[in-house]
Length: 563
Ligand code: ATP
Ligand code: MG
Ligand code: MG
Ligand code: MG
Image (cartoon, rainbow, N blue to C red):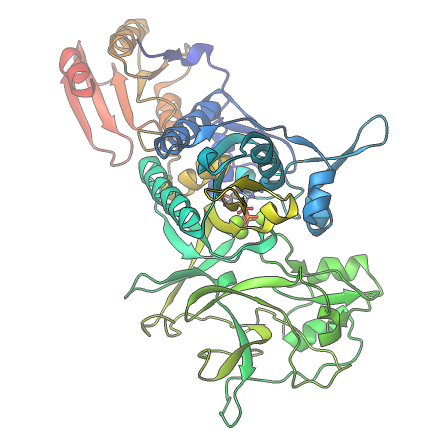
């Protein structure tokens, strides 16, 4: 017996108008259809229907994680500072971290991701190679004080993430664990009905080497990815970053030098880049009062020049120089080279005399090297710059003209290697009786974000339109007429429920059929069953929410069709 939810008893208030602050389709529709409710910037309540969809996504994720041998655990979200201090992320995360003090003045944080604590857990629980490999995961609330928590649940400051961590004794083992997750993620996103691409990615603050993102193409996405129509090459533009050093005697028409003033203001900086002073840039490093404040690690730390200008007015911003990178191993990022994703560090352009300033990477066409081939035009590892990719640029793998698309990052998998194991000295006793350093992977899915991504990809001009696996119900029964039809609707609903079908039945009195139909389309349950309007006695209408196809059938036949 599946649940029959009567709308007369459901806490739901649908809205005709979009919320004033909503920019994205999913934000508008999830609020209007009564799935979520905003409490504060980036902080959301999941209302009954929304909670059902969230649970459905969670169930699929859990089933596929269990299928690869993942063991579910639940770690605290409120965490002591020390492990994050040990890994360096207490500082590295900067403003993104929610920091809390307890009554004794002790420092805590609300977990943005849990590599440190999982490493400690395994150090505590596993002592021998026989205890490994192990895959642990949790589905838990995460906290990140995002700079721009817009777009509804797509970018929350509190959100649900499935984070998993693998622990192996060898590189081959890690590669296997990574492959298992990659496969599981494909199963998850397929079952959810999401259109996605697997893209090369940068590792960012997570550290480690190889990493791939699962990107769901959607206009509301905050990522841009390079997509090759001819081969399987796909990469986040953040990852299409090369380490370049001009090769002697080679012509470099694509390189353009910037004539940079010594102490530029926000205005001169913007002018330099040829962008408005209010522009948002990625991959930009600047110094303020001698401190590198805007390490443009993609995504989290975009530099909003206007905001920076406001904060620092009168703004005196220096551009970084080669010396700034001395001893700064944190200024490391990956790039996609001929051998796939590799790790390099930022070093300022050596052609610029020491002391002169230089911009390291700003996503502005024609101010940087384009279409260069590592090894041919440049030697890797001397300075890193951003290669601005444009539509039609040659694919690094096959040379065909690439496409650029917007997408939502719904998942991210990393081969972390031994970074955290080194920090916490995570060793197990190996086969030969000697300690072996453990190697790790970390694997995230934005569970709450996936709900919004699904809404983005499947909605039409009438409203939401869920795939069966995630929909809050299988059938939306609409009682569209007099009391007798309400009786019929409830009867049909009960029969469907008894057959294991999840039913939402609109039995609201005093609500016109027109409003009920509009609400049914807005709510987006896959099948709509209309009891009693323009139909003969005992005949109902079945409607497919996605295609709009309708058919009139006797009650018994309609029930048989659905069950
Ligand atoms: P983004 O680039 O969108 O800021 P991220 O790269 O910082 O995401 P990860 O650290 O890779 O995120 O976290 C794993 C997953 O958690 C992401 O792939 C994404 O699906 C989800 N996620 C990250 N930040 C948020 C957020 N603020 N709100 C909802 N989901 C998020
Ligand atoms: Mg990202
Ligand atoms: Mg982020
Ligand atoms: Mg990521």
